[in-house]
Length: 458
Image 1: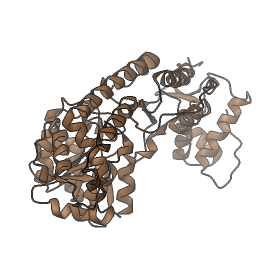
Image 2: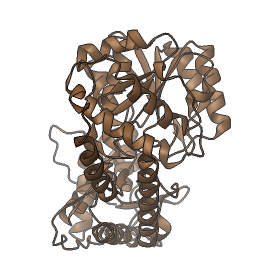
Image 3: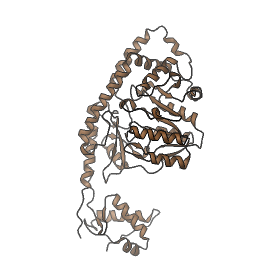
């Protein structure tokens, strides 16, 4: 019977057992297919509890060292095949961590609009202080952009912010107090997590599935925590890329109204899937809707729009006054002109086309490991095949020249799944993205080969 020699240190005993098991497999003292002692027998010989051995075997199974079969026992598996590390691309690290849009079309449009604005004798007016909520012309442009999604609002309910992040901060400063409970998806935008932490809010994550927020879990959280607000991204959720069905949006809106919870909807990716009406369109109680031009036009413009409940604009504008006084009028003028002359619509259509081409590249490279995605989505949520762990996959990918974000950055509360987010627009060209995806595919397939089932030898 195999009995490990444990180096009893400061760490847990179950980890020491798993480490000894790994060492004995590596050094040949345990062979592939060899049956390990039962939990009870090994616990008796080591003088530990059965629970300790159970945790040790579970840890070894998680590492891919053993395979357990109910009624037969636990057996040594073949060691994982060494990871084949592709050479980093000649261009250096391909950073797929940030959700950037492709900017070629926007750059050309910017040159044109700046040339036109330079001839406008009223341009100097943009250098003055203006209303904290933004120039009414710019607010009207925001209302027109939002109306594309199916949410028609008067311009006086739209506030101009310095980007989507500033819209989140403005909303939370207005709606919440330190110590308030705010619900969000159990995996959510990490920028929101950071703001909530700074404002000393208590975040609780609500379970997700392939359609995003689960209504039953949301309702239970409302009953347990009496939250002040719900922050969520119903369309192309970040990071999972889930999209709520219309029926689910209606149900979430009903639950929020029943429990007096204000909806804070982040629709920054909504322009990529305009066939889905915002959650706010179904709201039966107070709701705020936010978006920005960072994904649709250009992040450097730093312009966002926050739609607030009727009659509440002045209250929310006070938070803008405290944090930035006003959004940059020059950026507001650029976006307004693009909305008025049709450039914004053309640039958003170009972005959808570019994303679709990149989605097709990803599907070709990843094959059957390709996660479910919208045809014009900007990011993928890749659940890793065993025995990959997200942190190790991230390290191996970086060594091979590709930077990714693991689920840990998005997790609220409980531990994150073994998954990574891949931002398809971050690569400067399709060719560079294709190289990065090829690298990831090789790493993923090496894990699949290492995880092939091994026949136990009795």
